[in-house]
Length: 529
Image (cartoon, rainbow, N blue to C red):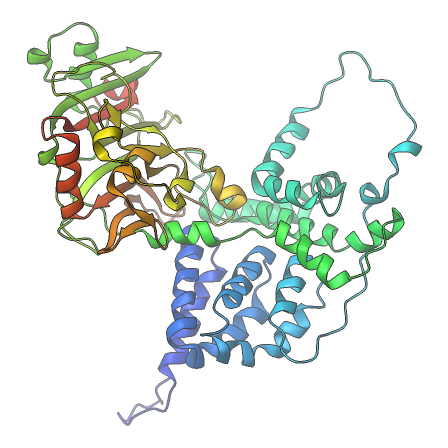
């Protein structure tokens, strides 16, 4: 702070430490996007300025109350403990205090970071009744005919499954009954007055109350579930003893259970690290765009010449169309960013569109693909189907033996897949969050180019990176009344120019085409009011 009055002399300060503290301050915001970006910046602090940032880490670790965010920060420190040795040294007293907490994953991760004498293992918490219930002694009661589970219970079960289902399933191997115990406790916790008041406050600040949209944020509901999962698991050793299964090595057992319950941030941060500015490509058509009328006309029998659309279909309120098929050489170049000068192997975008009538709460969507595929130019089969195959995010880590391209690419086929389920992300979709869909390479593409998986979402050969994933977010809906959110989310695959030339030669110049394909709800064909 400058002195008052300010005489203009140099003021002693530690600007680097102030910047570090400002970076870590992003962890305290509930926005998933901000948390991901902050954790990436945190990794840079640990790699580049650990000595300057050490005190900022100490402040953050002693201040964060949300158990999930605390776990993510501890996980980052643990992953960069070698380069971040100054941070680990300064935070030793904090790690020892965290290792005595009643949150199992927090204390297990903190224990891994402790140097010197290990702290004593804290006593097990009192186990939940569901953890020690003996099924053989439960009195059987008949099910009443017509009795059904309430909608509230089903909704709670679905929400719990989305937030922690995969982790609880893994942890059941070490602590049977954990999922049931967590569900019983969560049911009462979420109904508490304090949680309800806090949720309403968060929705007032972050949610769009007019359109009834939830923000992309880690709210008190998710925080309560995370707190419950770790608190119930903290009574695991006592529950095992009550069941006649003595845990002889409590530290190792808790560490294994904590690893199963860890909401790992690796995949969400790998995907976030692929983000670059949106490329200058045609977006999915908006509401009332003339192209939707042309697509409807083509679907009703108009010719390609009259409509300007290659093929179209109007089915169950969804319009799909191949706008045009062009030579693969027409695919665009990457203009900016890390891969400037490379070629786009394919791009995909999803766009949320406001309805024509602002009173309509329904939100419309449109998608657009522009991707390469192997297809004879005069082959008009399946033009009403997406030009991408069903993909799996794990394909970015697949090691596949090379096969001669002439063998692999001799038939019409897509070269790119799309993963819409993102099962590999697991519970991270409701934790740090992830894009709604990601483009992936097909096995045929990897085999034909003889590539090996590299770091992050990239493939390489002897000349370096040859294929990589790029993601972006754009067209942010901003307001003072709710959390900003992107209306456009996209991903693309870039390919090194020499590999693109090899692919075109292998598939045949006349058989490598780029297809422009759109999907949207039929309401988009109406003119905006």
